[in-house]
Amino acid sequence: MTSRCFQGRLLLRPSAEVNEVVGGVLARAVQQSAGNVRLHAFTFASNHFHLLVWARGAALAGFMQYLRANLSRKVGRLVDWSGGFWERRYSAVPVLDDEALVGRLRYVLAHGVKEGLVERSAEWPGLTCLPQLLGPARRLFQWFSWTRRWRKRGSEDMAAGEGRFAEEIAEPVELVVEPLPCWKGLREEERHRAVRGLVEAVESEARARDKPVLGARAVRAQHPHTRPEHLKRSPRPLGHASTRQALRELREQYRAFVAAFREAAARWRWGDFSVSFPVYSFPPRVVPGCVARLV
Image (cartoon, rainbow, N blue to C red; front, side, top):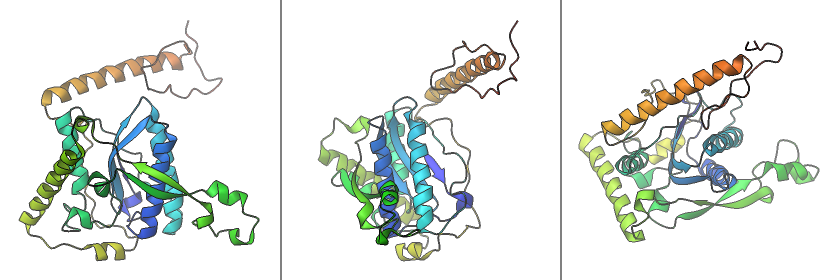
């Protein structure tokens, strides 16, 4: 899962306050999914984030809607940003096999180092899953309940525009990072060793490039409204896999899904509301009074 901030601005720039709010929102989003979304890895860069998740059925859409909406409101308030927070819809790309899954974890752990921002993955000042992958998988954050604030709004310490991040409305929430499905049979020490191996490989590649590093202090000193002069853009892959055959099969499945949806949508627009749509797809909107009836 990937989502980028509006115009690539550094709206998620790391700070103690931003990290706490982001962690609380992420933990709350996982909690709200009621077990239908499991979090395996995450990293929050200054202008985008990556998640590695497992999701049941259509739960992913609700999870991402809750996560992005609350990040835009709460982090937007912290960094004094009132406009659109996200550049576009999030990107969701399936991971098709275990080798590709480990590769995606390596990609997540490489952020900060591969861009030349810090020398070591552990030095990245933003929120990352690395401490939980190398230590306790559970971590507490604060969820700032604005519903509770609204109920207390009549009190003096909850004047309009104030108290949005007060301790009085904070609720502890636990963020849990689940082991990769392909690593569940490994002992905890073995998983830690595997993660350290991925991190060491990332840092070794960065040292081989022998380029200057910005540093964590300079990252934190950047203004969150800053718009980068150049943004790296690349086409979204259909899927992540270790073999071409797996990608070919995915492409064929997707083409079949699109064809079935288009056929169902055409009949739906003509008034045949008994038609069946492919699983996890959404029927198109139909304006009342503008439906052509099938003869």
